[in-house]
Image (spheres, one colour):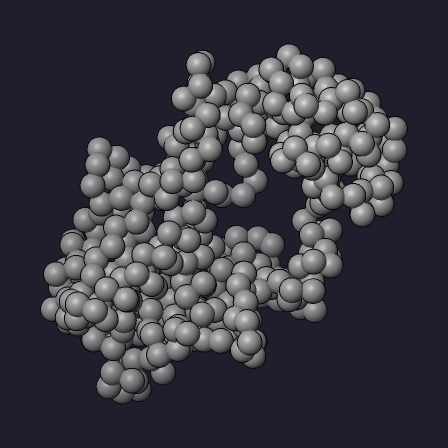
Length: 385
């Protein structure tokens, strides 16, 4: 199913958040053209490991997209970009506020070229506010959002998550915003400019923590129900140095879990005070340490207690649940992940997993707006493409 077939996206973004967003649009059928400066391509292209001539991360974020080079600092480059805007539906960018204006490619210039363009500006802190012009990365955004400070073992030392939460939250919000923008454009026939901030996006993921913070004393590491401090929602080490995770939040699951471990004295104490939680965790940890992870996987295989193994990335790539749902393709050197949604009752369309070389599609795309091979050669000599 390709519901966005016929939609053209000009992607000026770099690194992770923007390319993640345009990847989702690409997988939904949109034609995504990744536009990079010929003198300074997306830094992700150089991130290791390099597999079969391509950065693995670049492939995973940009597979299936068309690639062209265009120097927007050149007058010819700006003119060509505005010509492309005439043919496009969406422009996605991640420059700091004011950069597009300096290039004379801001929203006013874009909508003069295309009165129904959808512009999505994806930045760390948004187009307004005291930090709008500051640089930042995922660690900074989750730090400001209150997430990083709560991610730890209870000793107040923050533990940096391995997954860039704010980057992916911002990219996901950008996808939602662009789809809403396309719908608004259809109903109003007016161009749309959408301001998406990664800090804003990840902050909206805090309903549980904000609610818990209303308790006397607020919320801290290991004190929230979902923070690992409760015996019913945490991880336990096994005999072989592996881990099991328990998510027995509902009383029925906690009861089943306690029965399986023969600790029925803990039933009814699922949300007991923190000192009791620590006592229960100590007892349960000793039980798990008596056997290997494999033993506990088998022990809980038919027990509905939300007790499952903590896998490595390599193991996750072989996880049968993901394989059954076609979420991972390990037949290639770089494993590709599939679409995280299914269109029930329709035939699945294979995802384009090809990785383009830098500027591979430049000539074909520019030819569509009348650039001849001779003119293209001149542009190359000038460093415009």
